[in-house]
Length: 82
Image (cartoon, rainbow, N blue to C red; front, side, top):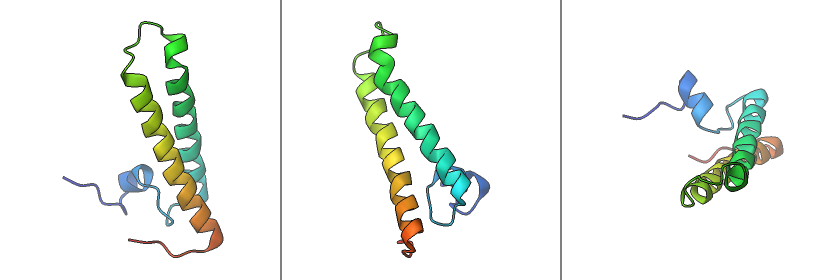
């Protein structure tokens, strides 16, 4: 079962050039905040499983990077690749 990128849920989940700027900025803020929380997990919660926080940090940074990439290509006027 896939989510259509043009649906409301798809526009929130997937970073695409068709998304409005406020949504892209919101995605970037969300992933940056989650990256910060994931990075602080070992200090804030000493009993947290050691294996979970690096995976969460990498996943959040990848999603933030994807959003930044879409924002850069949208700002430079590049066409979206499918």
